Structures are given as structure tokens and as C-alpha cells.
Length: 151
Ligand code: HEM
Image (cartoon, rainbow, N blue to C red; front, side, top):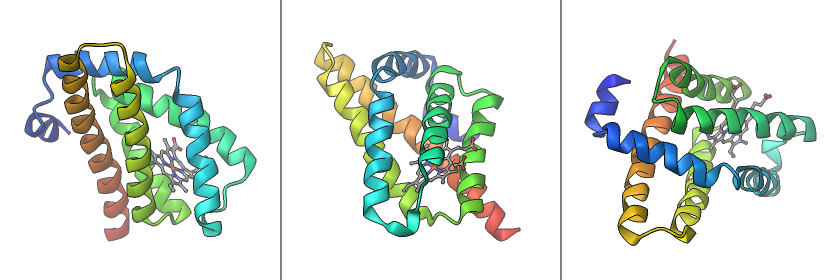
């Protein structure tokens, strides 16, 4: 993970931005996740998700996002990102759904940032940081996914 963090140039400023992004999105997260899974359920019946699973996912997703943006990219976060790939692999979720699903959630996060009452330069910096964090998060999840497939 350290090599990816260096490559993406996630520096202390980006980490401060990530914590600020969390403060912006945390209040909207339940709604974003709820709409996300409602749309997932409508998009493909093969992705059958029970009400109980969606309830559980609201909690685990919140924990995951918090860990990504707030935890300074520590071991707990690394384990959480790896677990996303492992769980998806266990349930047989095609990575294409994870990727397009992620794009949807990222668009919602970007919208929250763009609608925030902040100077344009700050919003731009936050969007750049969001891109880096999303890339790291997807990379770690997909990497644990594929290493399971290769084992
Ligand atoms: C169409 C897209 C997706 C579907 C159908 C889906 C479905 C699921 C399912 C069924 C589980 C297992 C839940 C359980 O039984 O406890 C799961 C786990 C999880 N998913 Fe997804 N997922 C999708 C995309 C995403 C995306 C984009 C993220 C973003 C990070 C994500 C984050 C998680 C997390 C954090 C867990 C819990 C891992 C754990 O701690 O056990 N999922 N997902």
C-alpha cells in the first residue's frame, strides 16, 4: 500500500483534505448508500440482495468509508479494503459491478463536494484528493479479489 500511496502522491495535505471530505459526506452517506442498493436491486435480479443484507451493508459501508477518509490509511483501513475484495469474491460479484457501482458512489461524493459552500480552489483540491483515494481503494479491493482468483 505504501508504494501506491507514494505513487499517487497522497501527502499530508491530501490526508487533511480526505478528513475534510469525510465531514462533508458523512451526513449524506446513508441516503447515498440506500439509493445505491435500491438501484443495484433494480438493475440486475442476479444481484439479489435481501433487506437484511442491505441493512448490514449500510453499517459496513459507512465503517469502510470512514476508515478510508479518516484513518490516515493505516492497517485497519488496509484490512477493510482487502475484505471488500474478499467478500465480493466469496459472493461471486463480477468485478464489473463493483467498478460501475464505485463510479456511481464517487459521482455522488463529487456532487456533495461541488455543492459545498467552499471556494472553487478548495473544491478542486478536494476532487483531486477524492480521485486519489478512490483509485487506492479500488486498487486494494481488486488486488485482493484477483489474488484469491489466482490462488
Ligand atoms: C453492484 C455493486 C455491489 C454489490 C451487488 C455489492 C454487494 C455486496 C454484498 C452482497 C456484500 C456482502 C454483505 C454481507 O453479507 O454482509 C458486500 C460486502 C461489502 N461491499 Fe459490496 N457490493 C457492491 C459494490 C460495492 C462498492 C462499490 C463498495 C465500495 C467500497 C462496496 C463495499 C462493500 C463493503 C465495505 C462490504 C463489507 C465487507 C465486510 O466487511 O465484510 N461494495 N457487497
